[in-house]
Image (cartoon, rainbow, N blue to C red; front, top):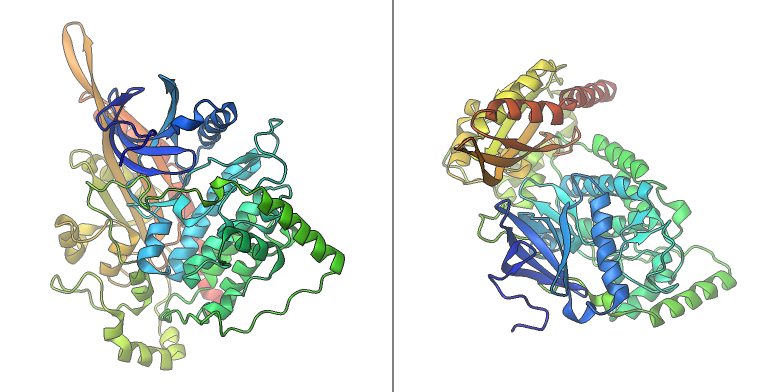
Length: 559
């Protein structure tokens, strides 16, 4: 049923043709749109009609656009334009083809360990961009983290973001803005916030990914907020007993009650995640999660606090919960935020990551299922587990120079150019390069569109030792326009290029993701591709080499 906020499908707002509604929240509606001038897909967020006459909400809406525009990072959704037309305020953002983490969790329940750490590291990297600029997101939660078709995490929805250094007062002191289940104790009690509050929220998201449930639940938002401020969180190790101690310690520290007891900066957090990943036994099978019943888990002993401090916290909670606004239960009613349903979903089996280290030495035949049922290999896994020490002792040593498997997808006319220039750059860095043509079963699966072009989809078909680093690149046409001069017409095309390198065994990012926009005509196509790709990936080879040298060194020490 259409509401007063709805914009007619097919209507044009600020040069963007509205195609369909994607979701609606407390402040407005998000539509899938088409930018007519550049012939590309966008997401258009429109402020609710009932709020357009409220100067405070209009200013907050403008501020959200400014916040996103000020942050340039591959793990933060980018903004394209802002405007006002016929009394309606809107801004356009990049269109993300994928799913939000909330939807993925609803479908899968929980996330495999290595993937959960990868998502957490990517969001921490986004916070490292926002934190130094004084921006506190205040509403980090699964539904505000998009996972695109290449497996990259993108932080969205800065609608309640807070500028630490801003002189403007857009909220009352102690006003609770955010989602209770992922709010920090200081947010729940109305205390001043900094990036450590977002680190807590990210810890709550990691907790949710690994345990299948939020760290704290209650019958109402009021009950949740009260618990967050006054009750300890059940340690993640009691919920998922299969987790390594290092991961439990990481999660517990991210969610410490007191900000001073958490990681103090996103970069400190990222370094801790890297240490966790380095310490994982990637050669041994990852045990299935053993999720305990929270009701039967013995509650952790509460820390000794003075009666005055406890009552002070409860008083703070009382003040905060009285000021809870409708935004508490805001968020998009539709689970799919910025999802391209017309495009084939990158419907990957996230649980396949658990089978990475259970792969046998032979290459799966073309008739084999894309994702094996882990239960079919129980006897082999048991045998491995019994002889774990012996198996690890026989593992082949890591080569000094890694082999990089290049997988380029996207526009068929542009893929060969991207592949050629990327291969030249990687080889020029002293690294070995492998092609999908060397792995027939993988090439066949990709040609027939039988697997998503992501780490999860690709790695299961790569024979052990064939490649050590996976370089995923994508190029897509985003628009075109005609150029007329001296009576002649040339088409100028705009395309986007992206590339990211991950560890083939773990899916961990090993270099700074690269991206760029390419504008070209048939006359300068090759040269412009070369310049853009060279500029965007100039340091990628060195970063891959640096990562590999550390990994080889770590393997020698362990051996």
